[in-house]
Structure formats: C-alpha cells, structure tokens
Length: 191
Image (cartoon, rainbow, N blue to C red; front, side, top):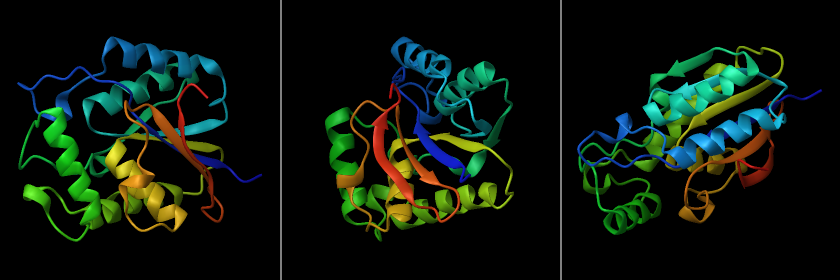
C-alpha cells in the first residue's frame, strides 16, 4: 500500500512582537486544535513526525507525537521563509509583503528569502526524509508559506499565493509517497 505523506501547518500562535517570530509558541486555541487532532485517530498509521525547528511547529509536532508515542525529529532547514530582514510586521503590511513574495518568486522582497530558494530548501528536506524509505505514513509539521511552496511543487503549479492555505493556520495537504501525487489540497486539521 502506498504510504501517505502529510504536510501540516502549525495552528494559531501567540503573537509577541518583542520576540523573534521563530520563538513564538502556540496560542491556547492552537494548542486545543492540535490536541483534538492528536486524539482524532486518523494519523494512527504515522510512523515518522518531522518538524521545523521553530517553537510553534515543535509544540504542534510534540503534542501529536505524545499521542502517537513517536519521537519528533527536528530539521533546522524546514523553517518558514526567512523574513528576518523585516522582523515582525503588522498584519496588513505583512499580507502585502507576502503577496509580493509569492507574486515575484525570483526576487528578494524587502530582504526576505526568495520564494524559489525557500521552495528548493523545503522540497530538498522533504525528499531527504522520504529517501529513507521507512514504512508507514509521514507527517511533516511546518509553516504556511513554505508549505504552499511545497504544495505548488508537488502539484506541478507555478508559485502562486492562490494555492496558499486558508487564513489561521492548522491546515494540511496529503500526497502519495510513491509517485508524489497530491491526493487533496489544503484541509483544516479537524478533517
């Protein structure tokens, strides 16, 4: 049977402009959503959980890992697109810059990592894990922008924000390990 590979984005976070974004953790709502997912049972065939090194992704992965009795493997290079050049941006400004990030994938927008580079990085990390050919389903836990870039790659789509997850985080898409065929687009983690 062809194993499933899922890419899950962390759900809602506690926004703290005084901290670097990679150090933000889950909000109470994000934690509750993740706990419900962990107990839902549909991830029971998962044998590997691979997480970004950002706190919000690790917290999401560890909640699921505890329920499945799996150790989380942390991969530094699975981080969100590097936005350290601007740091925290107010939501409206962030959305405008994110639109430009996806619309001009070959350009560094305001010093951000280019979309093409972030796509190459996240795809390389996923492929490195899948090359191990371990049995069972694989769950990657990460972020919205690089998740969208990964979804575009495996779907054969040009980089475009129209393929972004819905607002709020906590969504996933699934593809078949053999053949890398995307089985469905973004879904809320509750389904």
